Image (tube, rainbow, N blue to C red):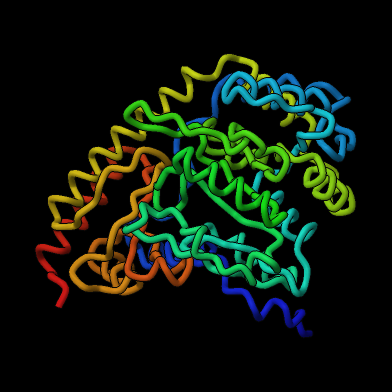
Length: 392
């Protein structure tokens, strides 16, 4: 039995490999602390849980859902964008329900890109932008994210011949893995360039509602003219601790929404209606206090971890968003060497930066989605390892 040759072009999925590493260590009886995967450790918002319990008792939710998401869900998402970002959306043509934003991101690439096309992909970045471009037969073009540019790509450096073949530009702010944020000036430049070159601007907004020190991220759709060329993915996973529920939406340009909906209707049957009902209850419940409480917790953990890393001699500036810390691998190690080192000497798993692309080499990522006491213990173990087993 032979699998399709296209599968040989993509690397193993990062988090699956981390899961395997953790499992191997635990099978040996090791008490492993994973700071690798960004999966919120706190319970889902109670309003969602209660609404789901009610919804599953309704037999009407047990049938095939609407392929595009229920009109009630799409209307609730449009209302949320109006209240949160001041963005007006037509729920019938500018909102599409998703089984989590990951599948929507992947399917949009399949709907829009084909052999001969270029997809502009930030590096480092969420691996799905790159892998799905490869699987669709298109060509990824890396946009380096460097500390010198505050991890914003230099769009002016993209050659004209690349723009001429480009179909899509992917942006992700607040950013995974770097924690960087985008300015309105940057968004305005991106919108104007994509309008000029007729390139679909794709904004992955998974962390839009995570912010520290008073920061609130804007939507790309707030920029004048953006809806003419942009689509944004909004997920309930991170702000409401709903990663396992798989519920999100694509919003924005109606032509892109239609293309994605057409593809999806041939691949899946839409999100489970009961989960859509739970999402409606969440978005319509005035969820800002819940979001603020989660942000306060992540900010507390951020401050604890930044102080600990600085005390280890690892320089890091506190990020203003996401629940990630992105920092150089310590003491001249490569990121993979540092990952192996902390597993061996501290039983702590970090994410190596090159898993997010070539420009992640030499960097590490810590996730703050772990019980605070356990996070502190993991950081203490790292400090002891560096003290007792200094890297050569």
